[in-house]
Image (cartoon, rainbow, N blue to C red; front, side):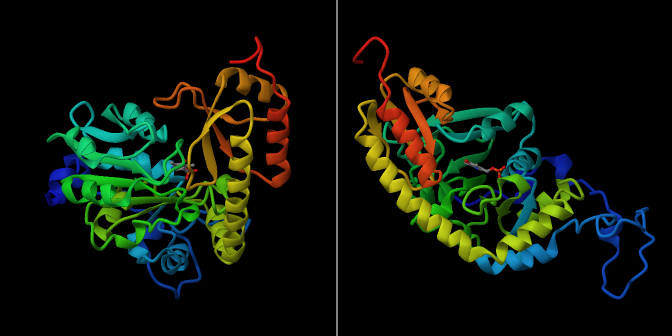
Length: 353
Ligand SMILES: *Cc1c(COP(=O)(O)O)cnc(C)c1O
């Protein structure tokens, strides 16, 4: 089934929207040296100037690295901005709905709730595998978006690429594939296949492999007409100057990023193996990311014990299919040893469970 015409998918008010035009949007050129157009203060350079609203230098530097064209990139205040924007672009409150895998990243549901859009979670199987048919069956004529996350959070595994392709190829709306952890995975990303899939939006972030969660920079990749809609709806200066500068600086350090990823993956495999040997461990789920999910004996008690020892992991035990599960991020070798050491010393209260 091919994609519906974009005009049928986009909310009518957004389709008709005439976006705010900032001073820096109207002026385009390089010769000017006297800027008296934006009511800025001429003092306190360089922070006195508004940043580039479309972050063109940064996109030019990012495009070859990501295997996309600059016009296929949206940059936002974390991936969370891109997630919120897809709702605001496509979903008419109280009328449209979205479908998503479950369990998955919590922000899709939060943004659905904020935008008053019905959210339809579809369970993965107990090994967190995707069934394309089941996901597609949950969609109806008012389903605008389908969310998939691979490697998935909190389960850590890649979704099957063939199943994901079936979803993208057979859904007439927009498919959002969150590849926040793709740098850690050996699976081919969807990001480089935008030209094959006009209905695909891929999310990436600076927050994980790129070690820059503090600067809040997320990316969405899609064909140019979709990116045009993001640009129309976003705040005019959504990515500040300091973030743009620091991101450019990170791009020149991309070999450090590759090194970090290698180190973290090696460390992850060691920590997972050691974790599996713990008395407290029930099961370690396979991971294609910089974290892993583990089922333990009494997750709440183990979590509380770790907190008392100053070690914070994520208690996911109340999340669908994640009963008694903790999610563990890979840290430095010292941090990881700290966790393993504490768990070796753990004795469940009330004896064996
Ligand atoms: C961490 C994470 C993100 C990143 O969000 P930012 O807003 O870019 O920090 C996106 N998606 C998933 C699934 C994540 O786990």
